[in-house]
Amino acid sequence: MQDRDTRVRKKAVEALVNFGSADPAAVPALIGVLKDHDASVRAAATLALLKIGPAAQDAVAALTDAQNDKDQKVRDYAAKALERILGGK
Image (cartoon, rainbow, N blue to C red):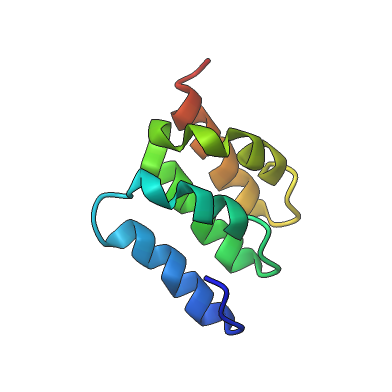
């Protein structure tokens, strides 16, 4: 997920979710991707964390920060991911 090509980074994030059932072991890598310079890559990471759900508890702080992202899709996915992870707490 550190390739120079945005498309490669985005596909790598999508692969983490599409292969298997959104493995919680991917959470630390996805947290790092939330800082990517490309909005589509950040959105893919927030969507992946949304799909992982409560097992992505370690991403709460990063997702909270992502709610202030300049990209609307990232903000929306971050809010939904937090809601799912925290279970309405």
